[in-house]
Amino acid sequence: MNILIIGSGAREHAFAWKIFNSKQNVNLFMTNPTPGAVKIAKALSLDFNNFLEIKASIIKNNIQLILVGPEIPLINGIYDFIKNDSEISYIDVIGPSKNGAQLEGSKEFAKQFMSRHNIPTASYKSFDKSSIDDAILFLKNNTPPYVLKADGPAAGKGVIIVDNVDEAIKNLNEMLIDSKFGDSSNKVVIEEFLSGIEMSCFVLFDGINYKILPYAKDYKRIGESDTGLNTGGMGSISPVNFLDENLKNKIKTQIIEPTVNGLIKDNIDYVGFIFIGLINVDGHAKVIEYNVRMGDPETQVVLPRIKNDFVDILISCANQTLDQIDLEFDNDYYINVVLASNGYPEKYDKGLEISGLEDVNDSIVFHAGTALKNNKIVTNGGRVLSVVSSCKYMKDALEKSYSNIEKINFDGKVFRKDIGFDL
Ligand code: AMP
Ligand code: GLY
Image 1 (tube, protein in one colour):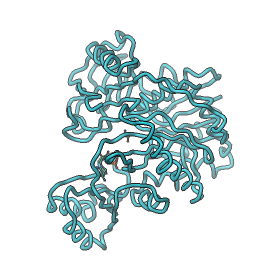
Image 2 (cartoon, helix red, strand yellow):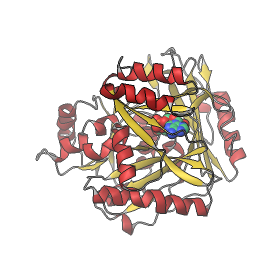
Image 3 (cartoon, helix red, strand yellow):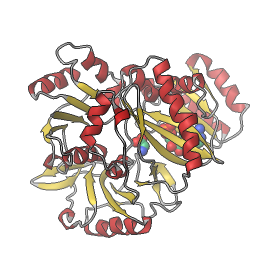
């Protein structure tokens, strides 16, 4: 079977690794793989937002199944493009339709979906340029902290949380009037602030049946003890030890089931991953956001815990027979420490040589931002590598990653030394 993974980060490297370890006979392709992923997937040099280019390549390489890693091609309608073209409509796509992808592509769409299906989330109101005076009044009548969200995709930067009302109004103006996030901030959702510990829930949905994947926790801030700027994620852990059966049951009945049933009821074509960002507010889980893909850096700890053959899972998802699969998970702790470039998430250098990768022992290293230069592996992004380890005890798994991190070096290597500090 010929499978194409769209995307080239550490999440997609983890997908490739899982597919590579399948017993099925797979020919694996990947768009612009890193030097790490290219060892297990054939490189297709493709712009994943150029659908005509993708079409030509999938015909040429006889691709039968496409797994879409990042959200942007889904929000742009890659699923619909493939399904509406009779030459390639037979191809299985793991990823939702453009309509389904609005769960991530529009905060307002997601909020309306949750309110229609009674899914617990922060209360909200949305505003555009024409209602900016109402928005200002709404902020003045509320209490801090103020949560402002650009409606559209903003590469994880579209959420602003401030304590001061004047600052909130300044940000509101920048978003609605000065197009701070381009068209993505033509609308702004103002939301109730929720306080609690966050966790990531992953569901695989075949349009009829669903499976809950292992829960994980992501460390989003650049600084230790969750301080400093938000990043794409500096580390992750699975399982999440404060999640007891009682809370898991509540999440299942109050959030997961209403979500998949809502998709069915609303006639939304959806085959793929649903990532539900949750916050535990005094024992009650509420939805912070939906993503229509797997999380990064969570995938790097979620996938290794799945004992089943991953290609079997993808095929039964495409065939709408997920109900026939019994998922089995490894109960050990999996932890991921991300190595980033100094300066990230702001300005940073690229092209710095990485040494020591061959000395890593008993951890898996997934590549995020790496490239080949003069036959040497160099840094090529803000987040560079994910160092993943497992053990029965979290502390021992952490020790493995941190001791391997000592062996990997590049100028300006930064990482959080406190992954798991709150568990
Ligand atoms: P999002 O892009 O929606 O995931 O938001 C980014 C981050 O902002 C989340 O991971 C939360 O830490 C925070 N956040 C978003 N919405 C809220 C909220 N209503 N209350 C508190 N924190 C929030
Ligand atoms: N880990 C958060 C995300 O993938 O958006």
